[in-house]
Amino acid sequence: EEGMNAQDLGKLLHREPAEIVKKLFMLGIMTNQNQSLSKDTIELLAAEYGIESKEKVHEDISDIDNLYEHEMEVSKKSQNLVKRPPVVTIMGHVDHGKTTLLDRLRNTNVSAHEAGGITQKIGAYQVKLDDRLITFLDTPGHAAFSNMRARGAEVTDIVVLVVAADDGVMPQTVEAIDHAKSAGVPIIVAVNKIDKPGANPDHVMEQLMKYGLVPEDWGGDTIFVKISAKSGENVDDLLQMILLQADMMELQADPNQKAIGTVIEARLSKGRGPVADVLVQQGTLNIGDPIVIGDTFGRVRVMTNDKGRRVKKATPSTPVEITGLSDVPEAADKLVVFEDEKTARSVGEQRARNSLEKQRENTQHVTLDNLFDTM
Ligand code: GDP
Ligand code: MG
Image (tube, rainbow, N blue to C red; front, side, top):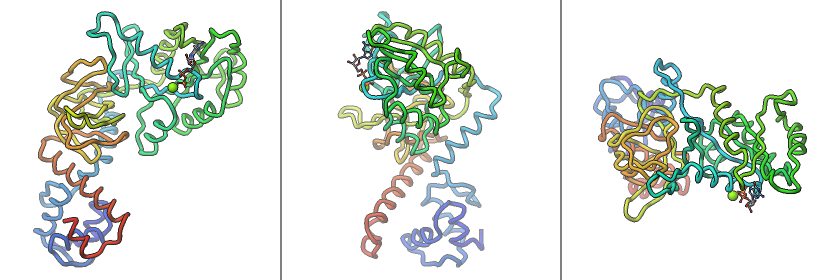
């Protein structure tokens, strides 16, 4: 495209024109923002940004947030939508029973027939009730939820707010309500510890009215379930109510489109290299899929479900542990699938370079010397 200059390319690539000029300088091409560039130069630059350039630079495929959003939009218009399991985060004040509830759900879910009978720690797990699945994120607490949201990851469909019936509404209860509300995520209240002598569930319900959480019996639309996470009393009712809430929300996904997902946790394993726990959100993730996650890339090598079983594919709302990545991604990083490994690699490498560059720009002034170091 004769006539295009660094400003035009900056717009197309969502970069500052100055960055384009600098990039070209590093490639040995001197230009300014207004000077028109040759076709060869544009192609060179496109390759540098990980774009398979034809005649024109259409969009920046290294912008995986954009690709992720695109697939989200695709799913909204899809004709092949099926119900998907709800994804639930448990929140509440310290010591009100979040971990106890998560443990109970995890253990009741593991049937005696299950190999080993042990649920893997993969950042999330699924519970089955009447042949329907519910996905629980295994990190209670508000920091994880906030961190995900701060990074634009919206994985939670429903918040279960745990409030101890012998303690009532406490500061972190209110904080949890604020988090859920600002995320636009519906709350189901689990009034916990009803087995305790001092338990007063009605008092909790009264207290919560002040925060707009009014039980259906009292004319509101919030679901309350009185449970004991310790004894397991009414925990099945809670699951039932989560499914009811999910039905009202009509949570759906298209299992046939390209998979997108979000990292829940990631780590470096001595024997297996980078390992990421990913929640698949749309589409189906398959063994061998070329992927980019955050600034890392690879092919899905081994995929393991929450029961520790190897699986070949993962459908929407399924958490899986995957290996095969070039590096360890971060929690809340997005996963997208590419047509081929070569593209995934070039996008991943480009993103890693961009991050590194951004880090350097933030930590030091660019001098000619360190500019050449980045090459
Ligand atoms: P978290 O801080 O919200 O994760 O709370 P924990 O799950 O660690 O629970 C705090 C304490 O409350 C532990 O000693 C639990 O055994 C106890 N606990 C949790 N749920 C119940 C319950 O339903 N009944 C009783 N009696 N104790 C509970
Ligand atoms: Mg806990």
